[in-house]
Image (tube, rainbow, N blue to C red; front, side, top):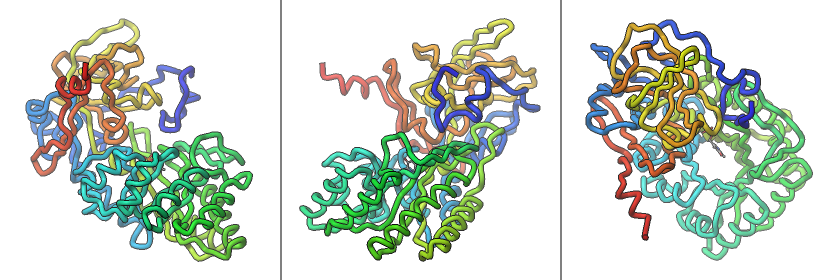
Length: 463
Ligand SMILES: *Cc1c(COP(=O)(O)O)cnc(C)c1O
């Protein structure tokens, strides 16, 4: 493919020819539970309901496009991760997947911790009431102001990403009279996506300190030399949309190797190991992700085995799922504006959003599902491409989708699994206002983030 395939992109991105599509599903009206939020149903007259609310009523009140987030599903997934890892591990939700104050409150209540990677995410975490000691600050180029704010707030850990940052965080903590808990992010030479992983000696990317060549060991020495830093552990994050734990196995082996080297050199057993996030979800029924309890068991076993073999006590494990918590909990609802049949090819169905509310298809070749949401239909399937309203031919929401042949202007379409990296990566391209995020639960709807207005856009334009 000409477009660069990304770890979060489609399955088998490099083997399927462009324009690949499978056969139409047996029943176009079915809402596959692997892909749709837990409370998504067809109501008595066929319209989609989510959180007990009819999508037509939601659209009447909140307009299109809009993200509707199933609060019960979100909370259930938090509990599933929390329970799967148990009391001797920590689950950090990766805020970059989607963050707002209500989400922070839910995480706090359900016992998850929170990863942030910018001052804005940190501000949201604190404003939402997450206790600072349950917040971790990430990022490969944290600003002096971000570091200061995090140390001052008393975040539970800062994940150090470079040699310069060791000095910066140490100096800030010293100046503020603190001893900051930190982890050191290392790159282990494992790149994992979906079903494949690549293990190499070196890694050609911007994050962390390389195990290879002794950079990470040098980082450890420098952290330990700073009185204002407390080295709590080592951090590794190997990829995204991962279905298989084999990549984590190699990563854990190499990270534990470093822990062993630290013990041998410094006589010190670090108490924590973080294996990052990247756990996959189903965007289409063809995706088959593992359940949290299976992942937890596999990761615990891997770390235990590696530590036993190295003669180390098992450190406290943490993980950082973002997509796997919030991704499946939301749908984006659009209204169809135009349709164009290209005979012998497909029908282009244009909706009132696009790459400004979901950049993942254009950016990563991501695959999505779509369903007619305002009604059911017994019409035969037609091959479509669901596209947005932006001035780009790459403005595609769903590249290959079967919709009922009578799909028409005014119909509502719902795209599931848009909870992660859609609103959080949304833009104002073409001066399009970003859609609202509305939580639904028990027959009620509540706006979490309101729709942007033209006034919002013009407010920044100071003339
Ligand atoms: C992005 C990221 C995550 C979360 O990734 P998901 O694919 O959403 O699970 C976790 N940890 C780090 C360090 C990340 O950069």
